[in-house]
Amino acid sequence: MQTEGKILFFNENDGKGIIITATREKINFVVAEWNDYELMPTTGLEVVFDVGDNYAYEIFAKENYVAENSLEKDDDTFEENILVEEEVIEDDVEISEEEHEAFEDATLIDVLDDAECDVLKEERPQSITNTLNLSTAIKNYFTMIQENIEKRKAYKNAEGRLEYLLVRRFLWTTYNNLTEIDIQIITPKIRTLGEDLTKMSNIYDDFRRKIKYPKLAYAEVFLASQAEYLKIRRGAQKILEKLERLRLDEQTIGALKEVRKKELQESIDSEQLSALEDEFKSLSGSYVDVVHMMAELDERYKSDMQLLTDFEQEYREDFYKLFGIEVKKHEFDLVDILNAQAYIFDLQLWHKAKHSKSIKAHFKQSSISGELNTRTYLKYYLSTQDETKATEETKKLFTLYEYLSSIHKEYILLVMATPQDALDYEAAIKSMQKSYEVKTFVDELNAIKWAMKNSVKVLVLEEELVKVRAERFIEIYAKNVLSKPKIVLIGEKPKNSKLSIEKLLQNGVSSRLVAQAVRDCVEKK
Image (tube, rainbow, N blue to C red; front, side):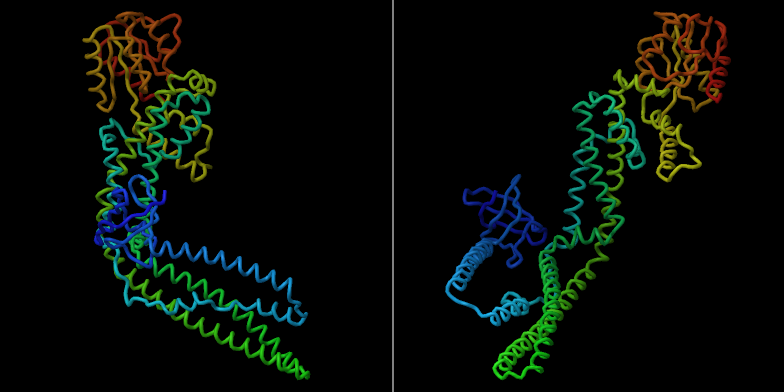
């Protein structure tokens, strides 16, 4: 919504200010939204602007805005008058064929208008003045980065991390594939997590782009905030466009001049000779004017470009140093938050997938075995690929699988009848191999709930548990948990087991032999 007001306050150092409207509403603005390059923002200046979220956009000095609109209206009136005059000519005046041809020739000449001539009258500064100093321009950019980090500081408390830059592509592929199987898994929470992850990813990508291309960072962070610099650059671009147009005019007038010169040499009719001489003089004069204007504009263009180059060189190296210092302060936090976001997003996505009948059925039909997670899904995809003949993109997926395997823990799950047995067997297993991750339960239901969320490589249980026998426990386990662990059973083998028994040990076996059986299962390929 367009609004009028007056600048109540403007700070030249940081480029920020306040506009007060006729209703005494105070609107904030920054110099980057200042679009009037005839006048700079000053306290008390009347302005016209658009407003949104209590910020002013597309700001112009009122006097120039009104003048430009008036000029546009005058141009419309002028065009209407021209149309009227053309109608009068057509109605009241008969034009001879020779005169008509002369008019056609005249239209080939793009006569220099007053606006083009005024370009040369404009005064140019000897140097460009800063609108926003170097440190403030850099601070403004990194304030935006810091604000986004602060909004997401709660992610730092996440229990895990998933290297987003490595897993990004396959993570979103997985998201799309799972939603095609069952769109119901996308809850409002997962959608919000995904949207926020995408937003933060875009911020980081822009951040990395600026690190990778320092010249681009310099242009977007510092030069883009310099009003006088931008004004001269736009003016130089307009001069360049005018030069291109004048070169075409030069070629057109030059060619026409040569034609008239030849006609003049061949003409013997004194009446025609006089008209040709007048036209040739006119063409020669226009040609000289165009060449002169081109020389003037070319000189002005070179002068402006030198001003721009000098300004760019003056601050570039200092910018690189200051920008580099700020990068080091923020890069770790950005990456850490992205990794935490990716971990939570992946966790929530698969948590819902594990409760989807459609997805579980799809995995079973596709012969995908293992815990429902990104690593299992990736393993299934890579099983159809030949690593020796893989493309570069596929090779990256093999690297990704190695990474996921390193962060996804595989557990040894102990389900015992008594806490003492659980403690004894756990201690023996860990003493034999300290790197093993061991989880123990004496509650069968909690054991299965835990197994639904984690990857179990070896399941150790006794024949007689607290509430059910091992045979019934395995039956319930197979129904609710997709992965198929190797089973070490202490006692007699069940007659109708849903899972095969890898190691069968006698009741009363020593904890050392239990630990040895577990190690055999882990190391067996």
